[in-house]
Image (cartoon, rainbow, N blue to C red; front, side, top):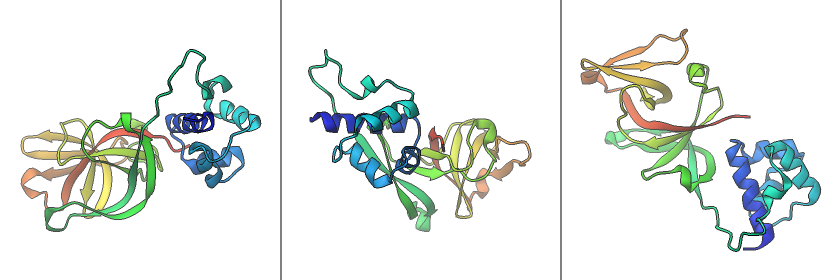
Length: 206
């Protein structure tokens, strides 16, 4: 692996750890998303001025962008590209991504088997769980969650995020904001309500 490619992968690693998109980092650098992308894949060299700005943004040392002297072999960071889903459909009981807004790459180490996708948080219903409007939410696709866990739920074809409680044949979809009333659904009457995944990680919207 070339040094330029190694530096690019470190830029991507630090960006993702901060929960930033390429567009957001580009704005902070005063450049374009395309330039950031070229840095990250090693097509363009990040000069000293750029690395200095990046070290301030990521709060790391410039040395952290380079392999240590004792490092004889650099391990490649493996990334997986995941869809940012805006809408889904459940025709014939089969979940399908109906609207994909784009794709985001994440370290494969974030994933632990199964199928994953992103959705965007909307509104302030989950603010007490530190989930803000516009946050990128990593969801593991699954049809059920344990009581007390936060899930992506499809209600009348709209994806919402709620904490799920189960009791006596009833499902309670609870917001993390007291101004929103809980949604109570009988397990026998979930025709228009369906759990589609479990929240695994919140990528902050800077």
